[in-house]
Image (cartoon, rainbow, N blue to C red; front, top):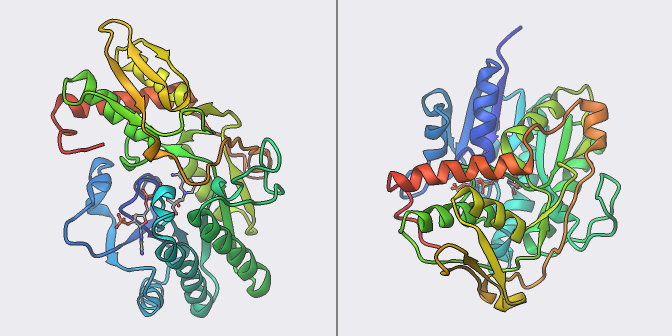
Length: 348
Ligand SMILES: NC(=O)c1ccc[n+]([C@@H]2O[C@H](COP(=O)([O-])OP(=O)(O)OC[C@H]3O[C@@H](n4cnc5c(N)ncnc54)[C@H](OP(=O)(O)O)[C@@H]3O)[C@@H](O)[C@H]2O)c1
């Protein structure tokens, strides 16, 4: 069989690093697109040991001519659209930009795939944030969307546009409605990584306190490596379709902090409620976690929990890493980075 070519947008991101490694192990030619920036941000590909095996090509989802030319040049057999302004908090301040990248950018890409010859299989990174103010528990592919941020609104547009190109133009296009998935490569602005990196710095005397927003928000957290396997499985199925990938368990931010603190060698006692809540290290009596209202979202998504039974039944996908294992993997990686002084430049 001829070697397959995968094009991954957003190659500098968390999922792309795991996906690139996964596809290279399956003998794909992997082409990754990145935005030109003043300084290089290829550290995730480096950490995964695949930087020299991925072909890199500059492409901005905001520039249609660029998108079309890249698709024509690479002629991919599979396109994984992972590029996005992916931070929900920022989307409230940059709603137009987020819409242009996360919604219109996807339309450019779908048009480019359709114009090529429509033969490339297409994966769109949809998100559990589209369920927002949830209409039922747990959420599956039939649960109505109620997005609660510009990020999620833009993703709903991209989701339905992908469904439409599948139905109207016959594209093999799939949307993965992925619940939160984390790893040691997660961006440091995301709450899980902020928790593990901050606690590692506190344990190594490099930071005093971890400040968080809503401790009671609940998420269904899985491991990124499990989820990129699911993306690939969607594109191997004879037909495009939409699938939820999730663990089916949800945990609060506070539970994540408790487990991570334990891995970092702390035992926390909690005092106070809501914005006055404080996590105190029992051994030293010091406050190491406190709430800062600045980190609350203007419109909160209180609780998300996914039902991935369709992906299990149709694709044979299921997650392998548990919540406890995920926190341990992340905490161990950040403790190691802190010990080597690699987190000193991070400000939280
Ligand atoms: N991780 C999750 O829990 C989760 C859950 C559901 C859905 N998703 C979605 O899945 C995808 C991958 O997630 P992730 O966690 O890997 O995100 P990530 O680490 O934030 O990566 C996002 C990537 O998109 C790129 N990007 C941003 N703006 C772009 C633009 N204008 N043109 C081209 N590329 C652009 C970023 O490049 P820079 O490095 O230059 O910023 C980065 O490479 C995203 O679409 C995200 O919204 C993620």
